[in-house]
Length: 225
Picture 1: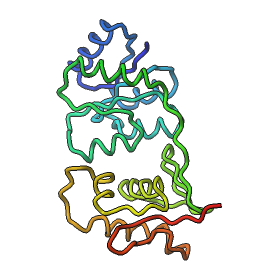
Picture 2: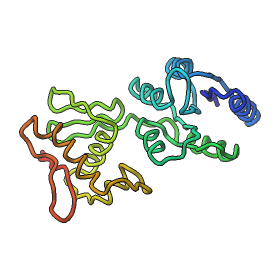
Picture 3: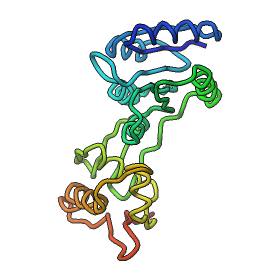
């Protein structure tokens, strides 16, 4: 099995190379983001171990760019940051798993084995609702022929709503999925971001696709057929 390790810390990189080689992997290494991206984009690997904090370009950007190029090699992200928002960002950009430093090397091996058993992921389906489309792979949102620019949280919120179109989602469900279990920010964050989405997705096109269900939550209403 061929693994690419992208890690700028020399000591950590040496440990990963040695440990993975001893475990039977063929290891290719890169110490900065740009080199890691070029290797991942142009060579074949069975799995990629990708640090988040890198010189040149960070792991989030590398992961997002690879998925846009339809490189579906399984990616395990490494980071010293354990905030829920960082984990959500990593997964939203297309990573398959996430491991916080410091970690036990056996856990890393176990996670890699799990990713390899799962195999290369398929390109995620484009989510559609009428003439609204959201592509999770390229992170492109369109309303007919018009491109809609969304922030990261706006995109995550719309993706969650579209993945459960015509279903009423409570504020608690939305916060748990989009902001994370431990989110302790201001209480009306969902209402604020729903307004942001409506200003971009609905109002310019004279529609009310994103609907409020009084006392229950929100839903995206789609006419099927």
